[in-house]
Image: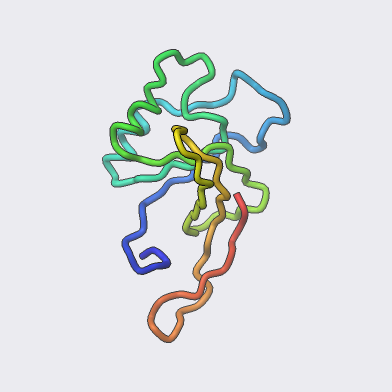
Length: 130
């Protein structure tokens, strides 16, 4: 369940590299379209990645992005794992409103349930800033 009580989107956060590069590296790891198809088949609606793009820097067709759009999925790119520990925390991304753009900068954090409250829900703590 989401913090508001609605069903939470199922998400996957992919760690493809130990460190974000300090400078542009055109050889960064990328995701293939078949991976997006597989994640969608498992009802994943959000993909978080620590690379600048799902597609390789050399991609001309942008197949992973096309697959994400076709399945109405969401991408969080450029995540940092500095403060993140392994677990089942819920990602939360608050986008900045940008009219006319295909993407928006967002402040992404991981929320961790801390303790059940009296209503049967959870108080939430900040697990990490992405």
